[in-house]
Length: 208
Ligand SMILES: [Zn+2]
Image: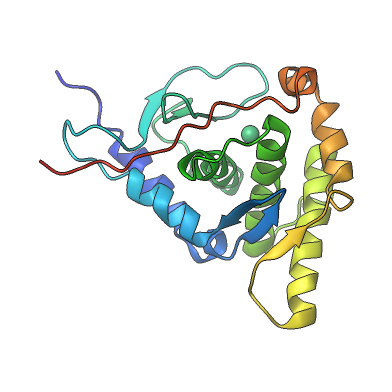
């Protein structure tokens, strides 16, 4: 028997990150640009091509405490707890979060762990905003801070009538940074916030 193809996960993740809601995400933080074309690249990297090397693969496994899903930038793997992941809005938003880590890896841009997490949570919150749902009432301070930033991005766009890139400043994200560093699930990030997750690029699979 060959390795499982994870076809359901593959097509679900691809659909979510190429959806209108995800494609509206467009911001820059600390020189890292997160946008729809980046998510399209990640979607291309999901396409299965037999035994060809490259691309992003899927691993289904039990997740560690505090994590619903993960992206491993060293192996270029998405890790999910089951094959049916991504069927509700919370799981879809977390897929946008993990795909943001993959996008940063694909751009082969060594980024500090704290900036990578801030970008991932802001993407997640922007996606919820585009769905018409707010994270603002959440008791989780990370979500509350990320939602404030996403709302600010939306308001800035409404103000100038543009759909373009919004550059975020250190002041704008200070609350989110503190919330992530204060969360026990990110103790490893807090111990070395300037360290990197090991972004090494995501080559696309090549045909025969
Ligand atoms: Zn993350």
